[in-house]
Length: 270
Ligand code: ZN
Image 1: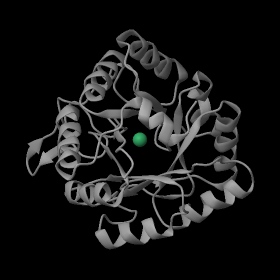
Image 2 (image 1 turned 45 degrees about the vertical axis):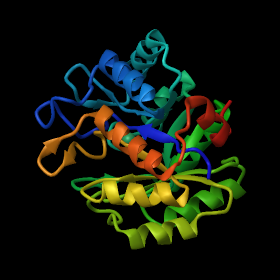
Image 3 (image 1 turned 180 degrees about the vertical axis):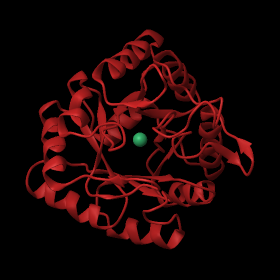
Image 4 (image 1 turned 90 degrees about the horizontal axis):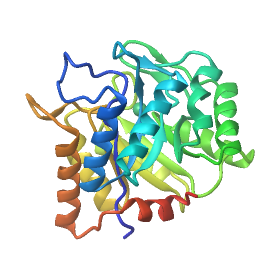
């Protein structure tokens, strides 16, 4: 079985300091988290930016500050920028940070709902983001909130907008989208094309059990405060503790943990 890629999603758009003191907000905090999580087994960092008030932002300058802070730590972790719907409204907003040429960027290949808003990704926007990523040699991570998004990704590949190996992240448990159940996960995994790379990103209580199943099936795992601020019921998590738990589960199975160098090979990154 291929080595396990563990992605840390330390910040997201939703957690605030009021919700948890452990969420990294500033560029320096995010870089320090990426560094310690990389040392504990994370090989990819999924990055969201916050403005000076801690609110989600699409502004390039904030992403640039995070990149610089990560450079300063010397961490080899793979950098993945979010192009998600919550922080920016126009296609240009959503693509703003892509000319910083991160290794990877998220790309939702369809629309769905978040708990209190719509996750709008219409076909022109998806093509625009995919084309921009292609031009900058950025690997899209395809964020799958329902099964139609898998077919949409395959259509984009036919159009020449995506290159192999396709990288899917199956997002489950976001209220308004597909529930986090083993049945849903098996259906999604069976719907994926051969030779793709896939991971799960599970929101809610099922995150430990479903991530464990994904590890056993040969998938990869994303964890972090973006997806879960609790470690167990009523106990707040830290990003580092979430990474360590996934690494320990994998080690118990005898599945090796990918280094950033391994992950670059598996994902076909430059
Ligand atoms: Zn995200």
